Image 1: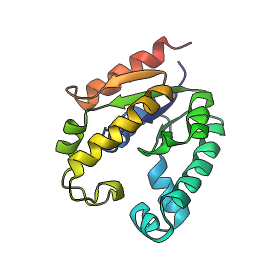
Image 2: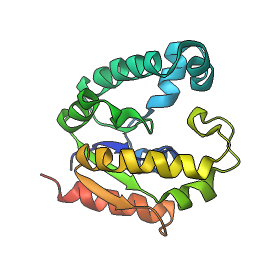
Image 3: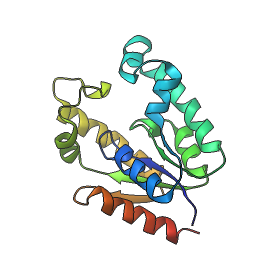
Image 4: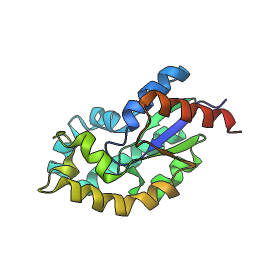
Length: 173
């Protein structure tokens, strides 16, 4: 079984939580793209957004994503919610030598999970639920285009989601 997988999806869809558990189960490294970016940037993503702007952030994100998807070896990679916005990033994910899983959750489900989280720069607006709905409308087709499989995250527990992904990885050639 190939033990290389990238997770894409909306902010709050469970990429980091599921990714950590999946990596533990498969005994492979877990890489959270946002966390790695903060290490590289020397600041929080929110701070970098405020100081440098979203375009500069997306440039750095794309550079790091290309490095990671091109690196050899097994890993579980949790991407940032906006990583799929650039076509090059979608191509790198699909060509990265592993399966790409879209952890799909509705904007309403996501809002319930992250409504109190003040660390997400794109949700620091007057109506975060509407913002999630707007982001979802734009990003859902991009997540689908950048992934091999769609995993519905609405009801299942984290452990169930990990089991679903492991089963899918076992069936992959």
